[in-house]
Length: 320
Image 1 (tube, one colour):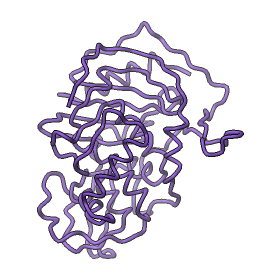
Image 2: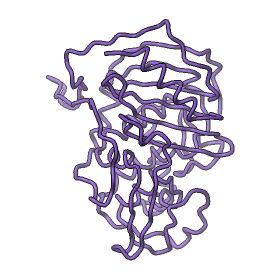
Image 3: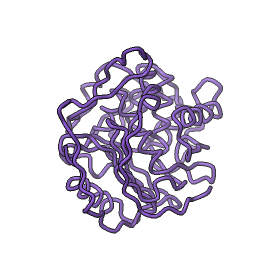
């Protein structure tokens, strides 16, 4: 994996988001989450999709407040970070707000599961029932603690995978995929290619440290934005805790979101990840001055401090 030698940069870049968001529409799913799931945060200032005249297949994303305008303060600086890479992205405007080694190819641990969730949501019906593989106990690391032959719906499995970062749930989605585990990995890389993630490659659905499983902070931000276009996935990553059931209620898994920012006001999700090689990783979506931004830190020694530094900077530098 190559790691570009970038200097810290703060850039303002406005480019068309039509191609990136076009794919997102292909797997929008509808329907409320189970009432058993609890949510403490309510999304704010989401973008709305409007039909583009003459180009019906390419959506345009507009502000909930059409009269809003951007004020950007270039005089402020982000406090020193421990992370190897950091990125702030405005998905509504398809705008890069801050990048520190944003395109460096790095191990991302369980941030990989953002792509796993997108591929699973694109293929499976949320209420489809999957059977947990017999070799599920071979999966190590953070677990939902699924049992061999346990029957669980896709939505329940996604809840466990995204909240508690269940490696066993991620493996289940890949193992049950048409063509099996390897075909699922092919689908993950096809997703990355289709949305032009040029610094991303997947070799497993879990985020295990492997040389060929990597991404960049910029690419992860775009993956998170894509996940958030799916209403069910967005609701899941915004939960602080949930009860995941298997075998029609005979098996119960109590899960708590690993995201340390999930109970903060205006935070919508998204995902944590930690491994020996990847270090501490974190992606959150948070409303700043009425506008949802995506923050990414990769390879951090203190992801909470780093994330607080990014958010504090954005609150001062970026206004509508």
